[in-house]
Length: 407
Image 1 (cartoon, rainbow, N blue to C red):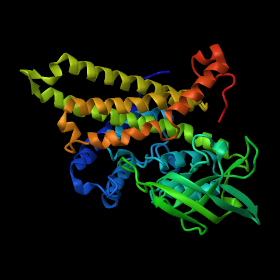
Image 2 (image 1 turned 90 degrees about the horizontal axis):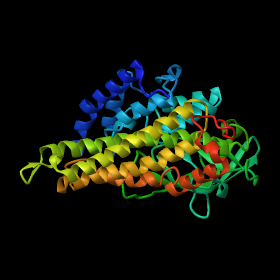
Image 3 (image 1 turned 135 degrees about the vertical axis):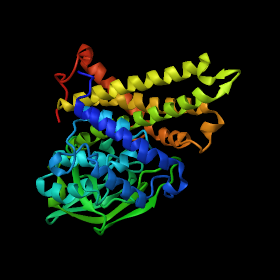
């Protein structure tokens, strides 16, 4: 693969970097910027979103015909990294989870009528969305085969009963993608559906408190007690729910990595500025060998994570599911983010541990990276199974491998 960025993407990155530096990073110092859940407040967000849209930086991942910029995954990787040098970058550019993954999924699999009703309002920033799959024990977590929420045929639609939790963004979402069991078939027992927040027969039980800053809408527990979904709001075919989750989760996991690399870079930027200025024992901290080792090791991990992410993005651009490549990037970059921000706090000392910098915000946010969209241990298990099944073919240069599932 060619690691150079085209002039178009270089221009996007430069404009995003300028926007982040001039419009977003200064706001992080003002407590009035934040809402009660430590994200950007809605009034300010609306103003900044309008600015991003006016500068042609809106929805990079969506087709131009729908108001986006039409970028592929590899091009998105460079741009998303630049966005998330600020805590607020992704949501301002309409590239934040879970909307980001939901938009990409709907654009791939929804009918034209479904795209007009369910996708376009998310692209336009009129509504937010959520992906409802994870369940409390003994329901599904990393294993979709354990799903207990059921969709039972009734008339011209489906009646839903079940329980979900840790549904990101649900508290602010209007459009929901729901994965539910429609049969006991081990491969084709799940189906995907669309519903609106105002549809009767379901409720948000609570917004689950977490240790870190939250996306808008938090992480919620949902209960379904007879929600009726017309069959026209079913995504794909009956039994395609597992396929739908695969189509969504691969790119969504990778865009997490893209954004986390931005936060890792920002952490090292803050530390770099501090150690260059702070004096100790007659010289700047940056002149001390121990400090250089810490900075260099973290920087190498960021570069390695970037290469894994870009390779996985390139594989996805070739039409491959890239399950092994995405898993490798997900595990490595989750560790990298935590390593980078922990290093930055250590180098900045009490200054880094205080709220005078965003490092403590990033540190708390980073801990979820090894859990969300599949725990690191699960990804390692998937990766090892692929290694053992493919043998020498695992090491082939570039996709597609002969037995790789196609999207």
